[in-house]
Structures are given as structure tokens and as C-alpha cells.
Length: 137
Image 1 (cartoon, rainbow, N blue to C red):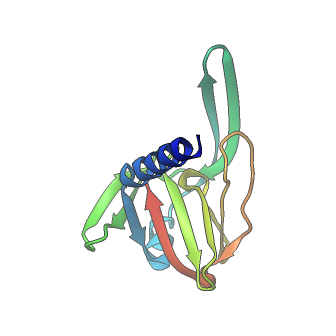
Image 2 (image 1 turned 60 degrees about the vertical axis):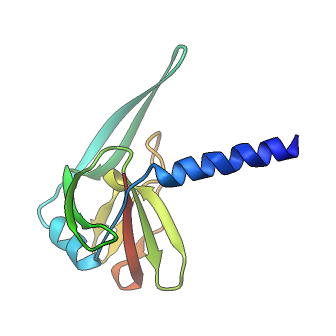
């Protein structure tokens, strides 16, 4: 039983890692691209079969596309969807992952939400503490 569980787990991890494209950008590039954005409330409706409907309201940005770099440093403009994730690695090695469409810049910090069902804010991350910003779509 445990060998079957381990095999299934490894296959699922492999599928989740190979199915996502990962991009990166600098803190300066993020600031420049957010220069003219506005904060907006987002109503997201999730339908879970057979009969469940979950409305979610979160605050976020109104950015629809973003310019990023791939692993070969080639520039891409990608569309931002509600499933686009952002992972911020701080200089001390700690990582924070959340949804990009909930990312907000306030003063000298980044905030966001880990879920679309309700506001589950991350701890604010200071720009000066950021080592790397990655996006996954």
C-alpha cells in the first residue's frame, strides 16, 4: 500500500512541476509595470460539482499582462489569469507564494492573498528584502 502511495505521489509531483512555465522579473521591473495600476475588488465564482457555488471577493491589481524573462533571459509578455502564481524569495531564503492578481504595492512593501475565497493576506514584504520574484502560469 505504501509503495503505491509513494508512486502516485511522485507522479503527481512530477506532473505538477512539468506543467508550469516559470518566469522571473526584477523588483525594479515590477515597480515600473505597476506604475499606472489601480486597486480593484475582484468577484470570483467557483463552481464545485455537483451543486456548490462559492463566491470569492478579494482585492488586487488591474494588471492584465506583464513582461517577464524566461530561464534563458528571453523577454515574454504573458497574460495574467486568476491562477497565475507569484513566488517571492527574500534575501534570508524565506519564500512566500500567493496569487499574482491579488498582489498590491503599498509604500515600500508588497502584499497579496493566498486564496481567492476570502482575503488571506500575506505578511508584507519589503522591496529591500526581495532576492527573487518568480511567476508561474
